[in-house]
Amino acid sequence: MTFFLHKIYPHIIQLVHRHGAVRALSANSAPTWQRAAVRVKNTETEKNNPYLELIRDTHDPSLHLKTIEEELQGSIGKALGKQGQKIRLYVQLMQQEYQRYETLLQQTAEDQQTIRKELAEVALAYNEHRKQAIQARWELMVHRQAAGFIVNNHQHVMEHYPIAEALPIDYDDKENLPKSESTRKEKKMQQFGDQLDWWQRVGRWK
Image (cartoon, rainbow, N blue to C red; front, top):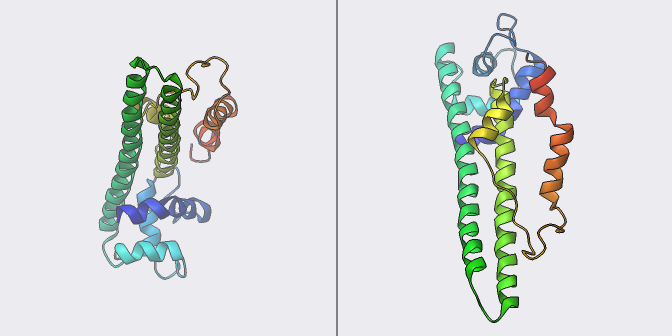
C-alpha cells in the first residue's frame, strides 16, 4: 500500500482540491485524509474516477467513514516515512563516496594522473547521489504540502534533511570550476522559488 499511495497520492490530493470536497468539510478546516475519505466512500456520485477506484481497491468504501480516514492517515504517514528513508539512503551513499574522496586526497602517488582520474570518478558518483537526494527531498516537500503541512514545510524539510554541497570534478581548480547543472538549478530556485514557496506564502490552502 505504501508504494501504491506514494505513486498516486499527489494525484489524489489534486482531485480533492480541484473538484472540491463535500460542502460540510471545507478545504480550510478538514485534513486531507478526511476529504479523501469522503470521496472514497461516496461511490454514488464519485464514479469512473481511476484514482479513487485504485484507493477503493485497498480501502473498502463500505467501511465506516472514520475507519477509512484512519486507514488513509496511516497510509499517508507510511508514504512520507518511506520518502524520508529514500533521502537518507542517498545521503548515506554520498557519505561513502566522500570518505573515498578524502582517502584519495591523502594519498601520495607517483602517478598523480591516476589519482586525479579516480578523484573525478568518485566526485561524479557523489554528485549523482546528491542529485537523487535533492530530487527525493523535493518530492517529500510536495507530499507534505499535499498532506496539509503548509506552514514552514520547506524550512522543516531542509533542516531535517540537510544535503552537502557538490564535489568539484577537478580538485586543483575548485574556484574556477563551472557550476554543475544541479547547482545552477538550486541557485535559480533560491532566487525565484517554486510552487511550493508560492503555496507557503499565498497559497489557496491558507
